[in-house]
Amino acid sequence: MPETLAPLFVCGATASGKTAYALRMADELGGEIVNGDAFQLFRGIEMLSAAPSADEKTAFPHHLFGVLEPGEHCDAGRYFEMAMPVISEIQSRGKTPVVVGGSGLYLKFLTHGPSPLPKGNEKLRAEMDARTLEDLLDELEKIDPVEAAQVNRGNKRYVSRSLEICRLTGEKVSELRDGWERKTQELEKSLRGVWLIRERADLHERIAQRTRHMLSDGAIEEVAALAEVHGNWEKAIGVKEIRRFLSGEISREACEELIVFATRQYAKRQETWFRRETWLKRLEV
RNA sequence: GGCCCGAUAGCUCAGUUGGUAGAGCAGCGGAUUGAAAAUCCGCGUGUCCCUGGUUCGAAUCCGGGUCGGGCCA
Image 1: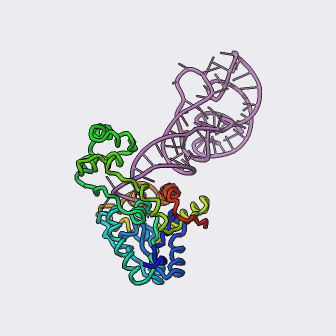
Image 2: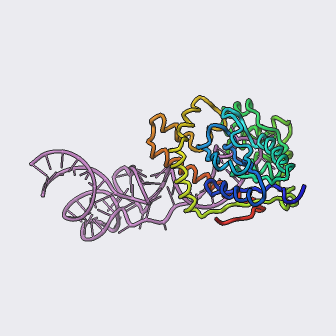
Image 3: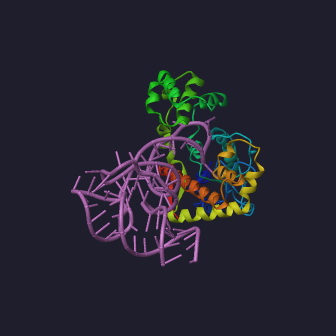
């Protein structure tokens, strides 16, 4: 495989301008776009997830956009399994995959390989969700005290996940978990990607604009149409807020404002994530 | 014009019998190994509207202003 066909990862906070930049790079490198966004995978929430428009998709082939039904479950592992064949298929045709997205964990699986740990188990999770955090910590303490000491003890999600792995494998998570760090050294030398950095005030302005258009151009209708469909997609920013608006609980203005707040906070979390991906080339835009 | 209510963090407001103030939201920082747009953790000095007074001590009590809001003319 020629060096030049290595995927180019285009990362950055939401509304930082990834889509436009990726198109430019696809043109420059002779590339095709691959979705690296957890929510743009779903069909039916294109406006809500700020997926590329039909117009934007005409110039170059786009992959993995709108490929899942809203009711389907997805996680980083499944994304990895969907994306890898797509990437090699693009390369086999002599094109460069340009992976665009802001979902840090999903991209991490692509760049650093999937975790060797077992995938989530719905039944176990439902069971653990019903228990208290203290209770879960007690059990983890007994099974794997090392993990109990290092896990984020205030985060029930993470405590549950640790316990889930122990239960599923019959072993201690703390011993199973071989860090991404270990293979990081050599691996990251072969990765190429950019992190689009935008000044905070500018980013906030773009988020406000984007939210306004999203609401007036169909996001509300998308959420209304999927009222009966439950699944991963409901965790998208805006769903909770739009539902409150649809039920008459809050005004349209309040709805918009709450989505802007949530999106800013998400953008901040993305920046924190990408800051640690030191192999990414920083690009101030 | 008269009477009443309000004025405390960027916003909405708490503040017990006077001991110089704290919540939610926002904002800022961080974490992140198969739910990740998820989930979690940390960060609170602000002329307590101004001005006189009472008091050892006033966001708190009293007088006079200013600016909102309401009622009566």
